[in-house]
Image 1 (tube, rainbow, N blue to C red):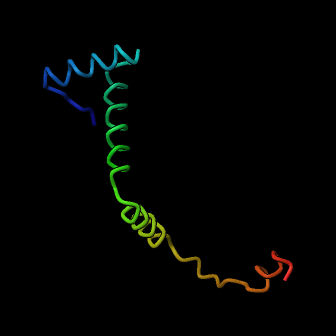
Image 2: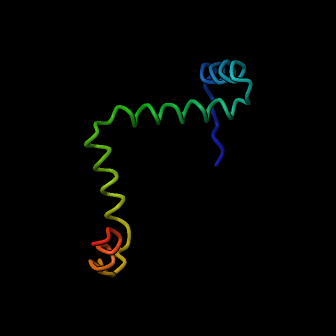
Length: 78
């Protein structure tokens, strides 16, 4: 779905960034959004980032397979 920007200030800022980066206004807006999202991620505490990873891992489907102790021991020559 297209994004429609009706703010003259936002349009001017997008044009300014586009000119400085030698990209289109669309790329300038994308760059600004990506950078802002990355900045948000950095502001999270390490525990918040770990919790997000744990939640993603927990959401993965279970394989139903059990760990094979003999196999893992053989990897370590035990």
